[in-house]
Length: 242
Image 1 (cartoon, rainbow, N blue to C red):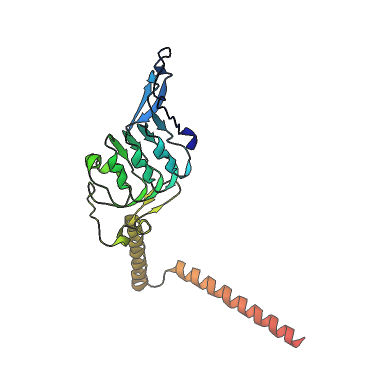
Image 2 (cartoon, one colour):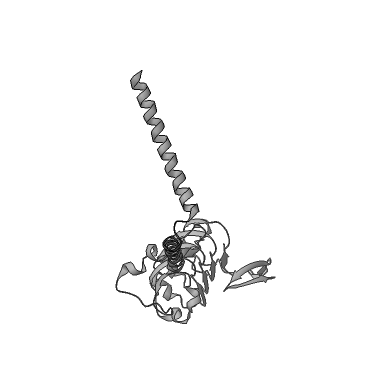
């Protein structure tokens, strides 16, 4: 990511010479949640789309030096760790998509300084804590944060608790390497089904006696153990006589 940063002291990197066309080749990008093909893109159009790859590791803090960036899409990767605070320096950013990764921690309050941010997607990660409020963040809906069971506060219906353990990621969700997770409801359903099955088997034993298949299974295991012990004793007695 460091190689992307261009430092130009005379600030002429956005200027297009008069003898050069203002347009470059066509490209297909995903920006503001819309996939589009731009046949003629301006050279000063600044957007990065690295979505749907297998990138791993943390988002480098140097990305905050790309001050002219207007669109950033890192969704559907395997990125971990927190959102770097330096992203609050991308004051020209209009679209930010970090969805479907394994990002953790709290959402930096510095992101509320992105006054031009129109589209935000942080869904399907491991974020925890209260969602920052104010400015552009007041315009985003639940869809921007879904799939983060540790988040609380508006626009979500989950109120923030004074107990920090209640919104711990370990206690709220289990996620695989692909970023898909499940909560407490499937676990509760599994326990409930197991309890119903156990109670049902107990009633059958009390009402109709011992089921033959259980008797055969348990009895077979006991017979094997008895034969094994008898054989071991016979071997010990034979060795003593010798």
